[in-house]
Image 1 (cartoon, rainbow over the protein chains, first blue to last red):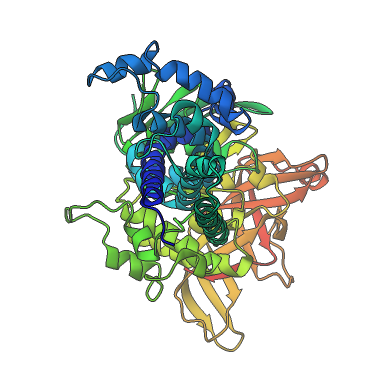
Image 2: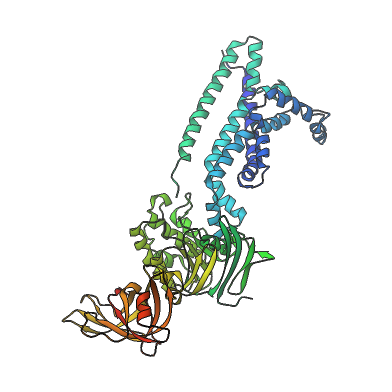
Amino acid sequence: MTVPPEIWVSIRLTIALATATTVILLIVGTPIAWWLSRSRRRWKEAVAAVVALPLVLPPTVLGFYLLLLLGPQGPGGLIAGLWGGRTLAFTFEGLVIGSVIYSLPFVVQPIRNAFDAIGERPLEVAATLRASPWQAFWTVAVPLARPGFLTGAVLGFAHTVGEFGIVLMIGGSIPGKTKVLSVAIYDYVETSQWFEASILSAVLVIFAFTVIVAMMMLDKRLARPTA
Amino acid sequence: MSAMGRIDVAIRDSLGRFALDAAFDVPAEGVTALFGPSGCGKTTVLRCIAGLHRPADGHCAINGDVWHNRSHFRPAHKRPVGYVFQEASLFPHLSVRRNLLYGAPQRPGCSNDIHFDEVVELLGLHGMLERAPHKLSGGERQRVAIGRALLSQPKLLLMDEPLSALDRQTKDEILPFLERLHAGLALPIVYVSHDIAEVERLADHLVLMRAGTVIASGTFDAIRSDPSLPLAQARDAAVTLHAAVTAYDEKYGLATMEVEGGRFVVPLPQTESASHHHLTIAAGNVSLAREAARGTSILNILPARIVSASAANEYETIVLLRLGRDGTGSRVLARITRRSWDELEFAPGATVFCQVKGVSLAPA
């Protein structure tokens, strides 16, 4: 028996979604993490709570609101109109937006922790050595927070690969567009295609194991000596 | 308005337990020590000069260049300072070489620059340039931190108790480097410390702080010998004089040393070849007499004139004298009992004899 081609389609789609989501999350999450780490405003913890919301919110609830936002009646419909579309729901772009929101805390939290761990001192040193805040951020804060970035990227990627509820709510199961691995497994089980379901499940088990090992190795690097 | 060649600072801020209201104006040359007990606001003053802390009110002008006043606050990275923190705070992700070069201007500059090789030589950093900071000892790290600050080409070097996190032995290893720095570079330094021994070795000027305020500022020698100030009233009060060897008695191993306004005879090992010494005289080792004593084992009995006196405590008086019958020589402190002061009818302006029971020497 050979692996049916639609499985490759789902795998490619999942990797594309997770990659796009991770890249966007690193770009969006870094300034949020920096602000949460450095700001002295009292309401910043309220923002932190909003960022962390997807951790506890049932994915179906998040998916429901996203469906309203992305659909033809919401702002997503307006945005889709820019390129002649009707809606962002049930599209790859919609999935990326949903995944970014859903996986945000998994990226922001490790980066924020890494920024917190640096403390004020290295940035003060950089300032007394004539580095502007922008230069100090890139030459001191980012390199010192590198383990946090790696952890965030790995977690964001893995979490996006594994999401199910939200995809089902806002993406459905359109092959090549929104039918990612987790949804494909669900469909195979629904239609009693146990062989395909077991291949995909095994792939995800191996992937999850690899992620955990990678995380443990990163943690060891985090504990390197400092001066 | 502040003048050229001055460090003019006034800081008003709250400092937790008390208000910080510190102002001083000292020459922008040599080493100025900010001296006082821990928690008196020294570090906050230094951070304000560096622009790391913005005080509620105040001003800061260096060499006539205003860095901070009511309407203007220049951010830290635009101030030409070098800052050495209590802990070395090297960048752990960079090698020693790249730490040193972090703040060095990219373009090779003018002739008065502080050069990389010069700094490596001065601070003895050969052989550690490619190492990672966590592979260095505490003393080595602090030397790298000093080098890093120097290579950013500062116009003013700020040092916040750079030796206090180090053990005695490491301190003694770094102090000579700081002295070479002081002697070799025309760079004004503001040095925060609560260790009088460090201050004594390095400082030209002293700003004395207590509980958020400046209680005195001036040359180190003047502040230290002012009987009304805490340094002279302390148990270990002393003065240090610059002495030149003029003769040596080989039979008894005694050197004759000339100081301003007087001459001391001091035991000196024959092997000691330095011709100039720092002569430290503790106030507790000086007693005063109306007449020159005869038939005494004390070698050094010098005429001097009383300048002023102040109570050190209920029963002791600290007396400031100047050596020589005309009272124009070096300043010396004596700690005597209040009873002696009253019974011998000492008074400012009186000529007396200083009996010096012991001195300590260090080559200059």
